[in-house]
Length: 278
Length: 313
Ligand SMILES: Cc1ncc(C[n+]2csc(CCOP(=O)(O)OP(=O)(O)O)c2C)c(N)n1
Ligand code: SF4
Ligand code: SF4
Ligand code: SF4
Ligand SMILES: [Mg+2]
Image (cartoon, rainbow over all chains, first blue to last red; front, side, top):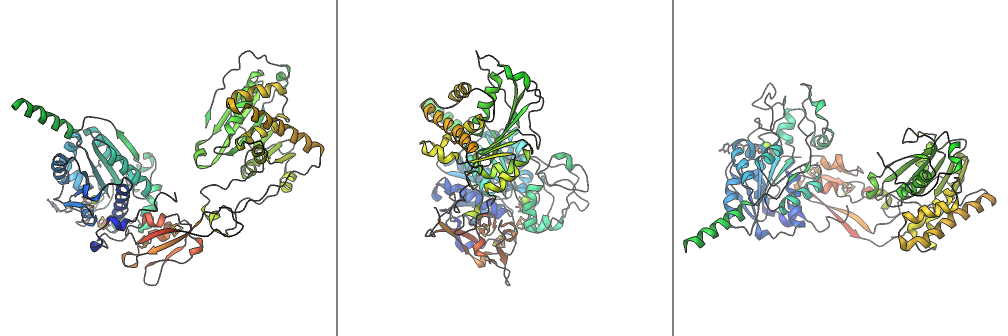
């Protein structure tokens, strides 16, 4: 463990003039950003060959801090922008950073179709179970019984298993990790970046200031520690007065297959068509 | 825990003394990953099975990769039901590493158990604090004499050094097999035949020599002074670096994550509620604070450092 990081100085990958970032104290998205930049560093990906596309939200804001080609797009649509970019520039590493609201609520349709096409790009969904930026409304991943500004009596809707959704929709690579395990998360993102098709990585992150505060989840440190202790069998989650986040979900690489990559298929079809025309 | 079945030894006839073992004979073999615990256990199990005994072997070796504890239970007799040895029920405890031997002592039969232990000491790779320059080693401090007082029959044997002198440190487990062979009733040629099966072809000769050494060492120890060789207490393992924390105070948002998650508890928030390393001598350079700080306010440097005298790098 001592030797795997010595040359990684995150500051070489940050827009220093934008720092410190705007995230609240203890926000898990900071650890997720570290894991991504560390993965890019270890794969020796040239900043000029990297395009980070993000949506709107605290998660979406992260692209602003990365010293590379970045696009801070519209809410729910980063995958649509990224699709165009990846098709036009197959030489780039395209990375999407999205939130649970961004990716599964307003952007849910873009996600399932991106998975279905299996275009080569890497999509990180930072799941903090809440609309953090807009003050804490319920999201499609909010655990049942949790308090949010739009569920003052506790959430009664069942939540999405984003990885199961991505797998069912056809993503070639699907994985999940908690922010507490930064080195493991880095390895997962690396595997995703190296996958030849669509890679979906769900990062279980913490919204300390809004979600944590509203639900009495303790200090930032306690929330980070809980990421592990709450990984319990679902049988413990049945009682209504004990709201658990869905971290009894499996982590690691959950799906990896070699379905045809969309960009290559499209270019092949285009080449055939242009041959036929002459 | 997995129970493995042992391949049959074709052509060997069960010998007479099996019927006598109405109660199973229990041998517990322990060590750390990479030492060859499982090989010892396979040799014994194969041997016992070739003699017509029913054999049950079970082992845990999941932690092997990290230098973690590895153990294997071998039970043989006319009839064996449970694959594991209960506390206080082992007839022989054979340990390839000193602290592992001590760890498992309560499994040995108090009145009659035989304890055979390599004096080799391995500091686990994750014992970071032990790796600090000049650190006091928090390795078990029991001497061979103290242990001898606890067991019915005990041997602290420097098997690893003996194997090294034969030119192959990896044969230490076979030195211990030699020692073990003196505590069991299987005939010598059988031992040699089975060991030959389990060692690489080109190292048969050195392993046979190792086996012989282990046997004769015990024979001498039995006749000579009863006190076993005292294990040599190793110097702390020194990793030649000094951790240094570079803190970007303006970025710290006082979230307290690093303070609460630092394994050595050597960080705190100062009067301005900015992180500071208040006990630098405790910091092991594990980098957890760097990894978990959501604000990138900590960078851990592992500076190269001169090795203090008397410490093996
Ligand atoms: C079209 C549109 N609708 C609504 C919004 C308001 N809005 C901004 S961020 C956000 C939700 C962000 O939640 P999430 O994606 O989970 O990101 P987080 O802040 O939790 O990281 C919403 C609804 C918007 N900016 N644009
Ligand atoms: S509101 Fe929540 S998600 Fe947004 S920065 Fe604050 S803690 Fe992070
Ligand atoms: S590197 Fe950081 S977390 Fe590790 S011991 Fe030192 S101060 Fe604590
Ligand atoms: S984790 Fe970072 S921001 Fe939080 S207290 Fe420690 S140094 Fe400060
Ligand atoms: Mg969110």
